[in-house]
Image (tube, rainbow, N blue to C red; front, side, top):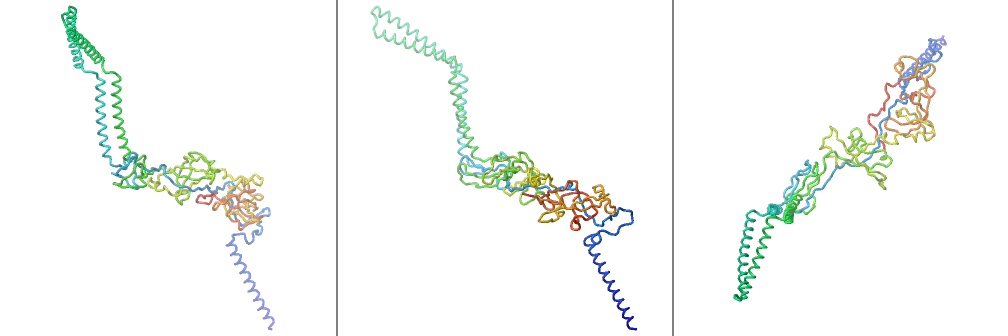
Length: 496
């Protein structure tokens, strides 16, 4: 009677144990399904009674994107340089003396032509007054020479000639009488000689007076006028020298700018050409960079680039224009100096850009401007014509012997793997059923979340970008198209 009871108890024990094992398996399956997605347990369920050709629709979904539609990040060459003022001048006076006035301080904005400093010029004011008097005297002499003799002077000269003519006539008559008396032996020899000499002297005086009268009537000679004009020019040149000395006794702003330093104050005695102020030209400011020769060969004047100041990245950069390039290559650094002009936009005030002077700057040269962007020599070094493509770094799968691969979704028989069928992949339709295959690729460059690769991947093929950890070569899955291919990187990546 005891044996049947033992058999019943043993059967109950095994039934309870079987139910526990079944429950444990169900729980483990649910956990694995939740962790790794549908299709991990039983990728090939029982065939459906729908008259299909014998292949079941898998429950595993992978996200794919067309290879040629993936947009890579914008890459840059990055070169360090310095922000400089377009013009930087040390201002001094050519004359020495005592500083009388310094009108500006560090940081003051000045305009071209503003008087910034001057020295004591009392001696120059006295020299200017003397030069003005010399000019007035020379001008009067020139006017007199140009006008010629006055009418009254000519009349007086004519009267003098007439007077001498009358005296000569009287002397001549007296001489004739003395000669007549002498011929008869009545007069003395002395009287005869005196009458003769008086006549000759009056004749000479008469000729001189006539010559002076003729000269007055002809006017002033051109040589005399030229000499008077030359004396006037000499006086004016002396006055101009004083003006030059006055100009050299003050500092005038040569351009619009900001005062960088003030070296002396009022009352200081300075020497000729001794700097007193330093001025920096107002914006736009410039920046200089040493660029490798192979990159500078692709740059030309007026090219538009981006420059950031300090440690800012390309997103915070300012537009810049290439204005100057050094013709020769530095034999030591093998670089060429490139100078750009920063074109401050509305977000940057003039005072702020002046504060950039002296700071470190970064020149961002897009890879698209240089031959290195193509990277064809890396992609073609194995003799195969392959076009580099960008893929998300997460889509790369580690292969054998240190190589890398990507998974490509290939359409199966009867499927329609195209971007137009993207909306028919989550409703159980089997038109997007794909078979996964591995393609070896070569990594050319990695930029953040994107990688540039080269391999046997056609531009029209679909690359698995999500779910690579759940699939493998030969696995069948349902392809889910990405709505839009992008670089997945919100910030442009800088590369050397």
